[in-house]
Image 1: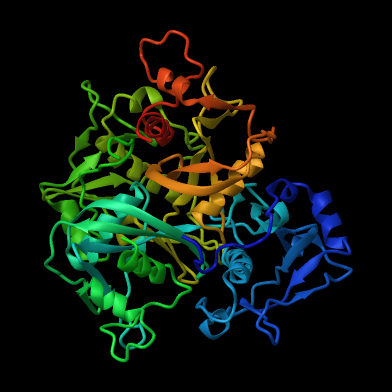
Image 2: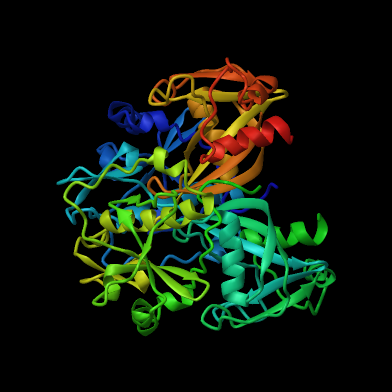
Length: 290
Length: 290
């Protein structure tokens, strides 16, 4: 499946370079070096809605920059400013993102997740001491106990329970009016993703599922999840809602999902999640390709 | 795919109960309550190689226990002792684990990962202050800034690049003699699992891949990974080894992998990973079911 939001970054992350302080310092000073312009955690966009790349300041120090990777031969960086007193809440600026091609959104998403992680991980969780950036901005080391810390990626399952030609959809109170989506939840220690799919559907909607089929995945930089989209075969159909998680859930007919994709449909049964979200592609896959 | 190590725990994790301090305290005092016996981070095993369950001490305090879930009506717990000065290095006790059925290993794996996480996360990464257990042992809250912290699950891709009837296998210097496995690596912020598969194969072996197919997943409690097994279609075949990651890599013929599964084969081309590891099942799937 292609065309999924926040995927397709054209950068070579070049992990080997991250460990080489001399190479990173040289890359920062390279005339080819490019610096991603950000406004806090949001991407700065040009008049034609593209990411903006600046020169790297001449006095740049490697510990203040994240090495995003090589674009052809150009080393690309994002600045790692000190944590603001009150960082913006990590929610997507949809008005910006909806105009950004997936591959550019992917570059910004990686930078945003890593900066955000540094801001929330200035201290060592093992001993409480301050820590220092290393590995080209992709790790921190404790100044006291030397424990190493790596950016966190939280795997999340997002899934449609299906019963023949019907799929289970739900909405949270915070959703825009009419919007429904696939159910979702964090994978916990000690469970496979298939087990997490079955547990979450049962916890949120009381529906038991059997076989689970993987569909696609997506990094989701709010703050740093890996969304894993699946379809699960429902074995029961009565809905018992967890009202702490969902405001409403129902079984939607495949024909109604197909209609929801029709831009000329004036009165869809529900409003789909936006195309940047993998749930959109999960509905598309189930409704038209399965 | 069934029979994968560390999956199939028969416990209902009952997330709703975790948030209810009164319910957790009552469950601890229940005559049905069971306490998983551990020796440090290792499972204590009975003479017939099963997990051992004890009574919960009468004076048990909820902040000192992790609620593992309900087994039928019996609430199951693991103790959360203070972090030892020098915790055992988190490597599998294979001699123990090889005798433990998958579903019992799964119960232990969840307990082990969560205890291990608490031991490495006694302090708030945001501000450096000590933090306190809550949510039935499934979270910590900072005593100072109130930031909430949840057990970490690190998604890892583990994959066979395949070129027709050949698959790419590699060995790390730490492997037992003759052992080869699938390549593997952590998924990073800002990439899909398919992108991580292609990046890791290229970084470690210099092989470019196209389409990626999901096969299966497994929680891996060393310390707390989610292993995501895939097959990737190779588009190049020359191997350029990253000697920091791998000691050797080669293209193995499918017939030789089939032979490696034959217990009567005296001289296999390579020694498979053990059945508890998802790599074993990935080889099985590719060699016999694809």
